[in-house]
Length: 480
Image 1 (cartoon, rainbow, N blue to C red):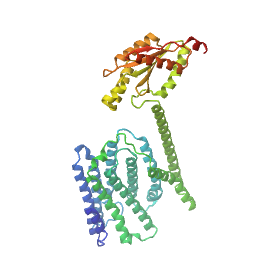
Image 2: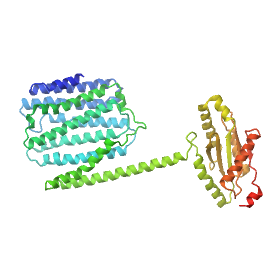
Image 3: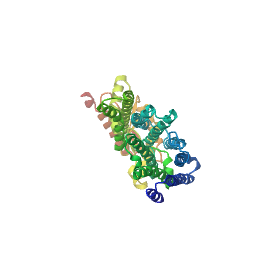
Image 4: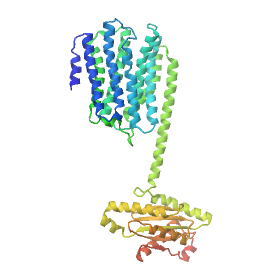
């Protein structure tokens, strides 16, 4: 509230360089002090990015005073002035601060975010080259050092755009401090952009530098930027800005898509504007920018395709996996059993199938509750799976029923494996099982029907046992 009032009062100050500079520096140093105060509340290892932000703002604010002294006392207003190094220090300090935050928020390399940031920076970099950098280099009305200084500002802005875009496209929490900081960075970029536009208007003969309210409004953009950084640092949730991202991933929202589209269209738009005016001045720059943007868009498309393929693969895997136990589900089993029977027919080897049913599971659920029942299903399936052979497959059939595929196992070997699994059942529980050996002719449905009949026989005979399935009637086999 105090900062907002100070910015409002700034509009009413007399047109005196010392008054306006002092007021700007007061607001700016207050913002830097707020950042340092906020950083002191953080653990020492989390303070570095805020120290960098405070240093960048303090240097930039100092440049205001140096600029007035250089102009009013020394009469030095030509670029470079003594204030330019202070103004320019804002960019590396803020860029380093954002880089530290990105490193802390993300554990690995986020190539998608890097491509997006590069695309946006390339598009706006081409814009800056055509309208700011190239004219400054070709102007011939200032020294080489002056030209380098003037070019350094748009380059610094491009670095800020790249880092801010990378921060926005990365993962991590997006609480209030995140938006205060990104808002401050955006305000700096907007202010610099407006100054460039003002400079172009002045070069074209428009006396906008004499419009007091307009100049005050532009200067207020930077005062807002100083203030927002301080507000973010003083926020009670400031630690969230540097918290690891975890599984939180930034999505490609509508605003990001619009920004990427706009950046990609800058090159053809510049070419169209120059063609309309009858002469292409920056043909090579536009060609290079177009090629770079095209390759970046193709790279982004390839990333999207790979992401879609990965998600499709995950969906396929999840559709074949039981959510509770992590075992193959009935759908996966229905694909696996015919394949196993075909392999057994081809190789002339036996294959056995068993249906397992946890004994008295309903009573266990009613006694201990459904969460305990779920834990039993998970631990029992894990114990059984650990006692099967490496070539065997255990799947969840439904509810407390499971099905086991034992390729290459005859009745004796299959029974031995199942009884070993029965002894491993946790929490003092047991299961009943029906075991059927494929006769080489029957279908997978008929094989499972025999195993199911054997399971019911095991339950009728007292449970906690493995029952062998009866052979199919000879007449049924003869008809096949």
